[in-house]
Image (cartoon, rainbow, N blue to C red; front, side, top):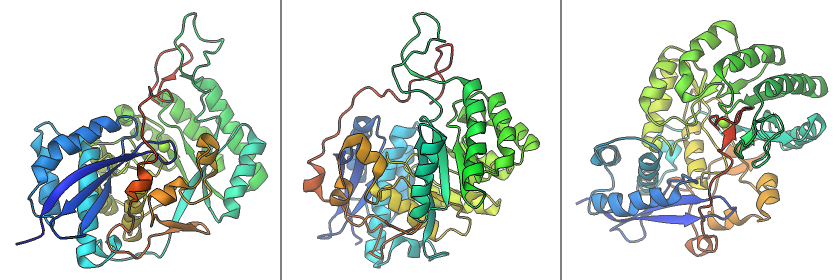
Length: 415
Ligand code: MG
């Protein structure tokens, strides 16, 4: 008789002001449990309900070691499949089951994926600034930390902050995060020219369009940025407009990274098999966890597409650890986004005033040192949770405003 699942629980915590959702799978073997990330920061209560009301009764009493079968079971059990709420809930359990398997094997997860292809993971960080000078200072601050790849932006993805309706909008226009495509296009090109002039060509630069422009503007931007030799251009078009990628490909040699919003294999299969992207950037809890992410990584490898998993602040250290374990064992690893969970995290500290709480809630999170991130050598994911500490930081559900992105004329634009 194998080890069985005793119960599946959701733990909600916001140690740095961002809602995080963790799944704990407990087993009938004393002391043996697993943890996984189910974070969908802006709909966490919906995911929690799926975990506690549907997945817990479905999984109780089943054997913990059948990860693939349980993944399929969770995926098919509601009849209608996919979507961020279901996939994040499944991811929480999936990662926890991998964590348990690692603990049973007495090995860190990268060992179960075939062992290390590299010792540490090179990461890129996001640098912002109100102007070129401030941005370059922030880039240099990251360079001092050993970071070689920097994603650059002025003024939060080209938009203003929420609430300011610009003069150029029509009368009665709704509040939102306003973006002027023409201005953004021009400013971004000037910005990258300035960065290269100030800092030279030794540093790798990334830019994230964040799906915030029309495909033709993305095409013009990609062509205009060519002289500045970007490492890649992130999300130049939305999921709904990936048919434009072929045209982008034909007209520019800028490397393309795409996919942090992807949910479903149909969204990436063709893009990879037809070499329409260079880097796959899925958010691994969003596609259902480690099981589908490993399949995707291996599929992408067959076509020479590299990984650059999404690694923002709105995912838990368990998901960061999952990224790192897959990266360590992936021959087609490209680069890893790192939101800076190592202290001090300037950005989050400035926003929330909270200092280092993440480390107290999640002991064992991957360590950043001199430009590389390292998994620890503990069995499984290597990250635990201090539930007493976690309870000090309750989640909340205010209306999300940063996603209310609007064009010059006030119409909504994908955020
Ligand atoms: Mg992005």
